[in-house]
Image (cartoon, rainbow, N blue to C red; front, side):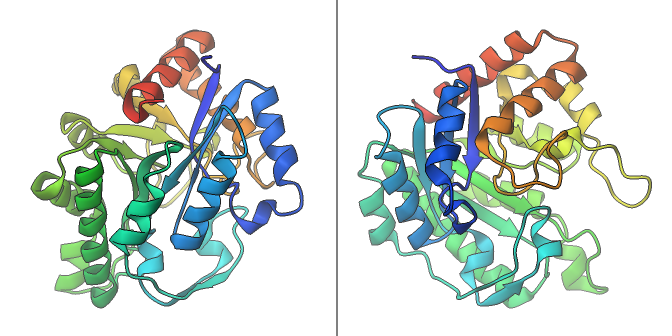
Length: 294
């Protein structure tokens, strides 16, 4: 079976869905939408695998260590975006053996989300992030699984050499991939510029967009030129993700996000590229099947 829509990055394994998880999953599958639950540390990765195995078709798992979980830190609602709840990360070091065991499950289709997050721009944190990211790239090479990349810049870096040197997480991730990666993958929740997107595509990595592309452009401050980027990128290198429970697209903005809403992201991409929605939906599913081997 081939679905109409696919959400390549969601977190229905998170506690935000404890009250109605089965209903959320059923709603997606009933609306011809497949999705992938993404782990952010070992416990949420295990939960993603358990969920994937509850369903015969349409639900997959991705396992890995998110960069913000490589050190003990506090994350508030503003930092996490709409739908986010404050939490404290206990800090974890990537355990290759534990994740290697999870990767034996056929429902696990990739490693991630892994990468670099420069929101706080702390030198020690960045060092840990890079070490753990490289470890995950190495395991991806070993197991021949694609990578689910998380990347976030600090767009107001601290004054000084360290801030200037580290302010482009996209460039730093790409450099690490060029040095270490033998597999391909996808940059999820893209919010860089056109040059960043083209650099990743040239290296063979796809670009995934969230509900943020349905929001009106910011009147001031830094804002990603989603319309210009999507117009320029080839359709066969584009994917869609909800990042549920965060970043719900219009007309659900401000509510808890869920995989079935990925249809709104596909609709917006079709509008920007001036293509039939059905053509865009079909291409995105084909891209996901090609990358993840599903």
